[in-house]
Image: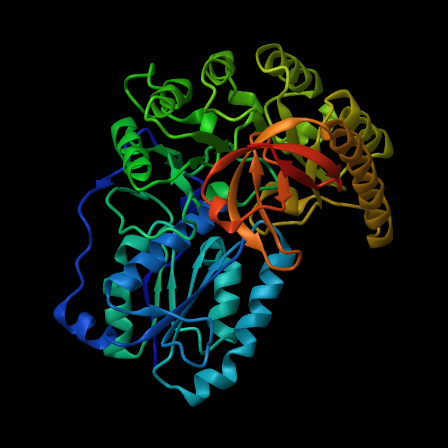
Length: 478
């Protein structure tokens, strides 16, 4: 078995941005007769880590493998292909994946033909990939976020040669239409509207792992949503690393995110959500469209990262504390009942106690209903990874605990205010642990209700009876 690098990642190349329009690839990839014969009766497993974009990529990978005639399995011993779709946003995620790859070493020794693959953001980190190449010898197929459409040829190459195949493109990543379709959920679906990111926040590896910002055609996105409506889907979540930048790469600048949002609202889909917006690119016309269409949900996750203008500048976020608060004020002027959540990083290099206090104070000022909170994790290849951070591990944990407590306190207030509200819940599954069906209301709150499972897939009116801060108990009203 030898290493074959069809393309190797380069952070330098991945950081270059051009004005060239991304290549569009249409038409479903077709497997060869050889690959179809090899795959017949075999099993696969896809393990997904990280964000919604990875979930959507895993759906596509699953569809490719199912179209070969392969069947999914939860048993790694039964699997002929095991693919890790990885996350690189924090060190903890990478450490976990290294550990799980290590656990497969004995299985790989027993089954020489086993294909163990890795894709996602970890594949794009040069240092990490070299570490994987040297230390995880049973890893024999690696492909990048922009190479998923090549999966058939890559698998065939590995099967025929038994070589370790590496195919990770860093630049000129395409926009692929007509991916094979598979969805992990029956009533809610993720829809990619764009790929990549051009923001280059100093702590973030994503612009290097997901490539240059590139938007899908409006017509293709609308058609995908219409097909989902025809299949009985009730809710779509529009995905992009920075959805507010949608259309910036179009010649026709009128086809921006607000325009897209309005076109999707007219498709007949019952519910629309989107993630993630960037405060620096948020325009008032998006709030206007949100307020005009009732099928655009009144819940917004608006990543803030820090409440300190000084830290935000070091993060290269392109806005300050006041700009963020002004945006929140504008949002609530259009949608008074909006439920606002955010992301917050503490212990960023150079963050002082005063900076941290600014973050604690904005939690109440912005009236967040919840937040994803993190201790800063250095990512190799980003500017912030080179900066000194004098805080000790104990100081970081103490600061994080204070942050988490402040968020919990605010979330408790928001949760208590929800009691007595009448909401609309899209039931999506049965919670076996407590015997109740569950779903999410228009504010993206998890609600459990004692009701027949025949209601799964339907939107019903519910009265909130109890708050458990991040989940709720309700009763059916109709």
